Amino acid sequence: MFKNSTIVKAVAMLNESIERYKMLNPDDFKVCISKGNVKIGRVMNFSIAPIITCGKACAHCMGYCYDVKAVIQYPDSVVDARARNTVLATYYRDRLFNEIDKAMSRRRRNKFFRWHVAGDILDLDYFTRMVENARRHPDFTIWTYTKQYSIINEYCKMYGRDSIPSNFTVMFSEWRGLPMVNPYNFPEFRVVFKGEEVPSDATWVCPGNCDICKAAGRGCVGNETTYAHEH
Image 1 (cartoon, rainbow, N blue to C red):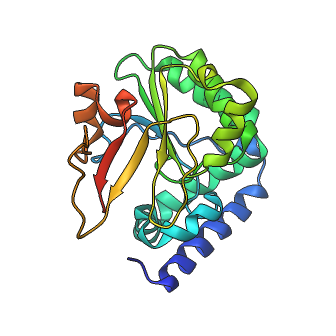
Image 2 (spheres, rainbow, N blue to C red):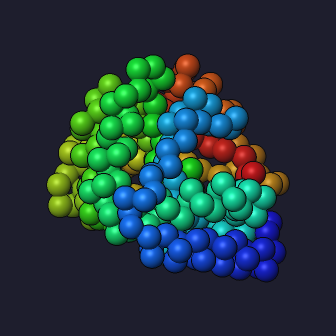
C-alpha cells in the first residue's frame, strides 16, 4: 500500500503537467494510445490521470493503485501521457475520439481495445461516446473497468442495457467498502484480498495477462465476472 505522501506527490506531478497542457494549443500535442504492455499483452489502450479522474470511489483504493507507482517511477513518459490525454478528454473530446477512431481503423490485427488502464469514466457524455466508438468498430473486442457505477446505470436508464453493443464489455470493478449498485447485471471484476479464498463457484480467475483471456475468450474479454487476487 502506498503512503499518503507518495499519493500526494503523484497527484501534484499530474496536476502540474495537466496545467501545462491546458495552456497549449491542442493542435500542438497528440493523444497517447499505447499498443500494449507486459501485463495486458498486445492490446491497444487509452488512459487518463489516475486518482484525479476516478471520482469519489478513488478514496477506497488509491493506496493500491498500481498506476501511482508508474507515475512515480516514469514521470517523463507516464505523467506526460496521462496529462495530455486528460486534457483532451476533458476539453477537446471531439478531437480525442476522432483520433482514437482513426487509430483503431488503422489496426489490421489484434483488434482489442481497453479503455482506462489508468483513470475512469468522466461523465455520461464521455461514456456515451465510448459506446458510440464500439458501434463504429464492431470488429474490435473492447472492454473497460469502472467504479463509476452511477454513470453506467444512468446511461442504461436512459437508453437501455441493450443499447451497449455486444463487442463492448463494461466490468463493474469491486473494492472493499465501496457499495456496488448493479441493477443491470453487468459482469463484475471482484478482488480476492490477501487472506481470502477464491469462491468455489467462481468461473474465471484473472491469470494476470490479457493475452491468455483473449485466446480463451474468457474473463473480461468474454463478458464474464472475473476474480483477481489483490495486487
